[in-house]
Image (cartoon, rainbow, N blue to C red; front, side, top):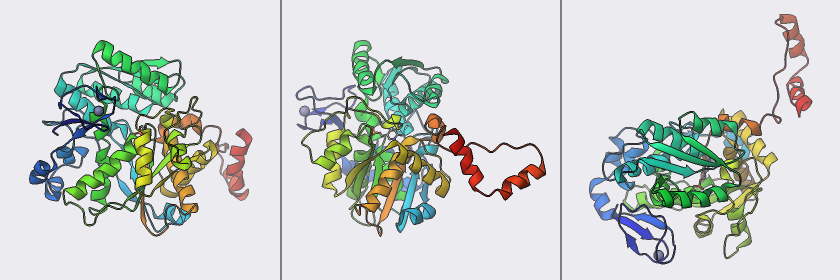
Length: 421
Ligand SMILES: *Cc1c(COP(=O)(O)O)cnc(C)c1O
Ligand SMILES: [Zn+2]
């Protein structure tokens, strides 16, 4: 890492600045690297010799010394999903399963590991975040393990699993009466007022780089190849861009078998689709969604910080973006669970339902390789399913009752759902 660089005007900043925007034009800052220097010390062999965590790619992440926070994060399974591929009618399908990321069961542990390792390097004792749910849990868990004080701000009305999954770690959790955009604005004020390290505010350039590790791992597990298509869920629009950046960095370092020609596809919920709407209408800027309304609360960012860059990237790579209804999200969650045995949160349902739509529309071609990014765990969004999937059929502890049940046929299990729906 050589420093921070403005994405609009290219102005350079130091590498230990707690700043997320250019002081000249308010452009977002991004970490810059000396790739020739990286190439001299980093190769496939370096990676292979290291433990299976995201830190096997540490030369491409913005920490100077050894990471101190989230040292076990990453290297989640990349699963060849043949049963799901058959259901969707594609030849070669993979799931990158960050629903089982350590320690807080979402891809956010990647971004938090980098941001908090950097926060420790920079001497912050108090950290925080503005969260739609998963970031709250990840900051709380990783800060606890690192002995840092954490303030976590969330919109009021999040799922219990997300709220408990932050408070259990002893973080100071504040629910704000408003939506995520209100929370985010407040956090900008707090971070600068108190001089704390907010991972997705003043530490955002470092935070965002953590998402690249997901891309490195995908390419490594595909035998050092970038896939033909990637479908990624979008909230602030950061992850999708970093996946693409990761493939191109490996290419630039000569670590891939073939040049990158990955087309990037973005997934959103119909109830909060500012980025997908920009792509589909060809608009010249992102029109914020004022009142997000979807069960995919983790993706409910009405005014996405990286929305414009994401929409441009999607178009430049020849990809596309779609958004899906809450019912389609539930169907996506069930299809993933029933075909591959993976219980993802609502965002996973968004990714799957969007992938299905894109395949049916012919946007994703059926012969290429496709990776779906599963970014969070179903245990944390149980409310979304409660009224919508079958309840258990209740019987007495008697073999006759069980036999009678089996004789009624499989539909009886579906009726259990209809009775409560
Ligand atoms: C935060 C989050 C995302 C997307 O993150 P961005 O980088 O903000 O687009 C996707 N899935 C889940 C489950 C998340 O929590
Ligand atoms: Zn600038």
